[in-house]
Structure formats: structure tokens, C-alpha cells
Image 1 (cartoon, rainbow, N blue to C red):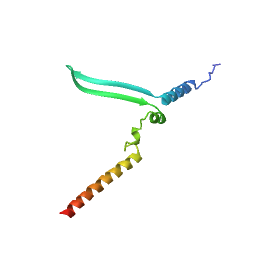
Image 2: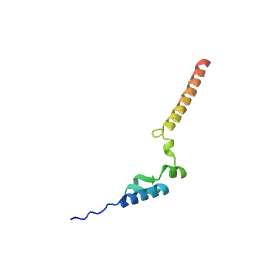
Image 3: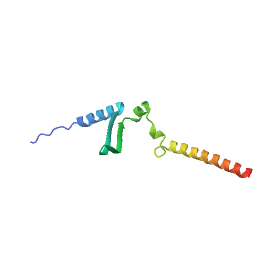
Image 4: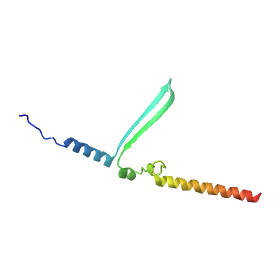
Length: 101
């Protein structure tokens, strides 16, 4: 008879613990890529990666996704409201000009 071993989920638990810890504390990975020819810098690419939970990011003051109209419907509404206000002001100025002539 072959002996069957019981499988444990220790690897999954360890991975879950690690992920929870990383999201709770946050981790930063940074790197720069520079392309130079004869001491002339042609291109620099700065790569910064932050892995953290949303709560941790907000705690650190990082909230760029809240103001990005591609990621936040609220930001898109705010952007549209600002554009609408600018267009109304421009229209008012143009109408005032026309009336003055």
C-alpha cells in the first residue's frame, strides 16, 4: 500500500501572511535607467513602485487616483464642472464684448 500524505495549506497561509504584511507596511521598489553615449545623457527613466493597501497609501498622503479622471468618476465630474465653469465665463465675456460693440 502506498502511503498518502496529508496536504497542508501552510504555503498559502505563509503567502497570505506575507501579502498582508506588505500591504499593511508598504514596500517601495525604486530604480533608474540611464542611457548615455560619450558622457552625454540621452535618456533617463525613473521607476518608482509602491505596493501598499489603499488605507496605508491614504495614511501616507498618497491619493493620486482620487484626482485622476480616468480612474475616478468623482474626479471626472469635478473636471467637467471646472471646464463647464470656464466655458460659461468665456461665453459671458464674449457676449459682453458683442453687446459693447
